[in-house]
Length: 328
Image (cartoon, rainbow, N blue to C red; front, top):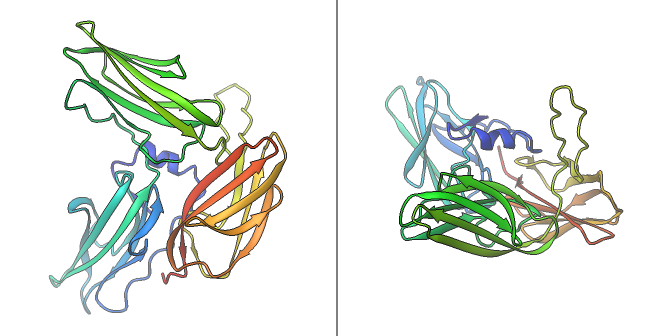
């Protein structure tokens, strides 16, 4: 598995998720490039994993390959490498048209293409500065299913230099960035339901700029998270959430396959777990564990959604991509 240079924080977070580095894509029988995953026109969860390999002409070797996303070069493989599983956090929400070019030592050029749409990305840099006076509140993006914790990003433009920008949740100050015109912050709204998020900025001329959004938090918990303890301090308890997933993100499976998951550290009794593939219910349980056989799942790369409910109506939710009945 390889990550782009833009990975940094995003991929350090990714390494904590239950995913499996895709098995190396088998090289094609004939000279050319083969993309094993994702499937054509797939809808997949951020961060996308591109699994591919290549074969040179007889007597030659692959000298290099380049990956393009929407016409822009995003990665070049090292000398002699024929393929990889490549993950790039710069592939944000939206449509991505991937082209892979590979060259062999006899000068042949091989090409493969795939298009897919990414959902659920987060930014690790500031929002673009708005073109006019005011605040660009670019994250969370529209139509995202949110938990009670999510990343918010905003950037302001004033009549003069911005002296501070501040985040409010339901009217209460959460965070202030002095001397700069943006923030990237993880907001915690506390409860499921509707909440008002506001960004307020000031410039040196005393002008005040405000942008308000009403956002809905649909769920409270995702995966189990166990914070790393500070030196010489006791370990903090792990959060409630999903654990022991099988299959995990980016797996290749063949139908029928067994799906299992467990909710751990739940403060209240979990009464149901449901699993969906592209929004279609495929497995259920009446308690905190589920082991079910999934039949007749569609071929290709698809989004698995896990949801669980407790006696207080608190929702647990997590999504990942799964490759079903795909040759690799």
